[in-house]
Length: 467
Ligand code: G3I
Image (cartoon, rainbow, N blue to C red; front, side, top):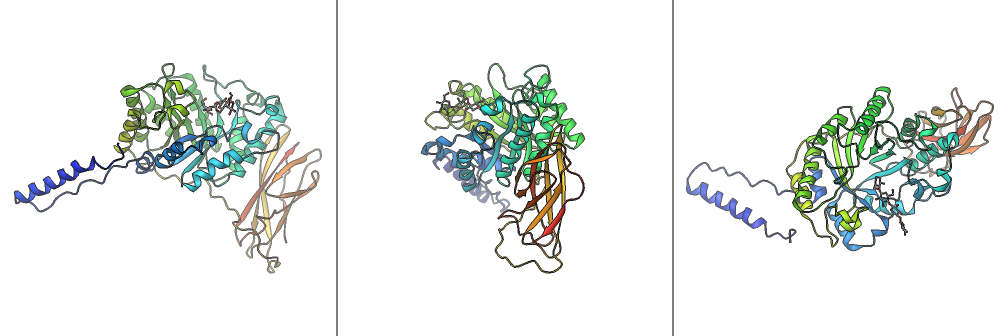
C-alpha cells in the first residue's frame, strides 16, 4: 500500500493550486518548485545525510525471496549475524572457513552495500580449541585470527568490530575472560593487528549497555577509548549495540552518549539496534534513536539486528521494523520519517590509511631493468613470548617483478606462519619471497606481508632483493 504512487497526487494538486493562485492574483511570476520527494527507502534516506542504514543478515536466509527483496530494497549496509564470528571462520586452529561469510559479503558487494565485519576478538562464540586456551598461546592464536581474517577481507570491509563486549556488565571494568587473562593490553594488540592487516577499514570497539551515559560500563569504555586516542592506539569508531527492552530501555541521555564518544575523535555507529515492543510506543523510540544519531555528525550509520520480527534473536519481543510477513510496521514509518526529516551531514571520513598493494599478478618474466631494486622495513606488535611483524616492501625507481626480504631472528625465536609471502626457514635468517599475486610492484609503490613468531622479534633493516 505505502509503495503505491497514490499519495503523490494531493501534493501535485497542491502545487497546481498554488500555481493557479499566483497567476490569478497577478503577483510575482515566481513559483517555488515543490521540494524533491523524500526518499522512500531507509538506505536512500540515510544516504542523503551521508550515512548508511544496515541490517544483520543470516546467510541461510539469502534463499528467502521475501527476505532478500526487503534487504535489497531498503538497506545499504550489512553485518553477518553469525558467519564472521571466530567459531565460524576458524573452526579448527589455522583452518579458515569463509564460505558462509563470503555469501553475505559477495551479496552485499554485488548490491553496492557496505559491509560491517563482526567480529574479530570476543570472549563468546569461540571455537572449542580456543575456549580451552590461555596465556601466550591464546594471545598468539587471537592475533593470528585477527590478522588472517582481516587480511582475507582486506579492502571489502567498511568497519570491523575488532573487539566485542570486553567490559563487565557492572563496575566499569573489564569482563573476565580467557582473552582478558592474557593481559590488559589484549584489546590494543588486537586493534594494532587489525590495522596492519587492513589499513583501509575503520576499526571499532563494540558493546551493549553502553547507551546510558551515567552507567559505569559506558564510562569504562569511554575511558578506554580516550586512553587509546591519547596513546595512538588505532581506533576509529565505537559501536553501540543498542538492544533496547524494558530491562535496558532507551535512555533519555542517549544523544549525550553519542556526542561524548564522538568528541573523542571517533565515529559512533549504532550497530545492533532492536527495540522490543509494538505500535506507537515502539515507533516513537525508533524515531528518537534516529533523531539522536542524525543530531551527531559523527554518528555515521545505523544497523538493525535483523529484518522481520521473526528473524530476530528476540523474536517474541517483536523488536524490528517489519512483521513476520515482511510488512512495514509503524516503527518502519517512524524510522523513515525521522531519516527524511534530516539532520547533521556526516562528514565523509576518509579511510585511515590507503593500502598500497600491487593490483595485478605478474604477467611477465622479463627481468627488471637495470637500476631496479627494493627496500624493506617492518613494524612489530610484540607481547611476552611472541610477536607479529608487518613488512613493507617498496620498489625503487624502476619497479620490480619479484622480491625477497630476509630478516634475521634472534636466537631462540622462530617464525610460526606467514601471510602474503612464502617463508624459507623459520629460525635465524628467514627469507620471505613474494607469492603469485604480489610480486610485481610498480615504481615507487609498495606491498606488505606479515608473519607471526614466538620469542622476541627481529631488529634492524631487512635485506631486500629484487628478482
Ligand atoms: O545454526 C544452529 C542450528 O543448526 C541449531 O539447530 C540451533 C540449535 O540451538 O542453533 C543454531 O545456531 C544458533 C545461531 O544463533 C543461529 O541461529 C546458535 O545456537 C545461537 O547461539 C546463535 O545465537 C546468536 C548469538 O549472537 C550468539 O551469541 C544470534 O543468532 C545472534 O543474533 C547473536 O548476536 C549477538 C551479537 O553477535 C553480539 N551482540 C549481541 C547479539 C545478540 O545476542
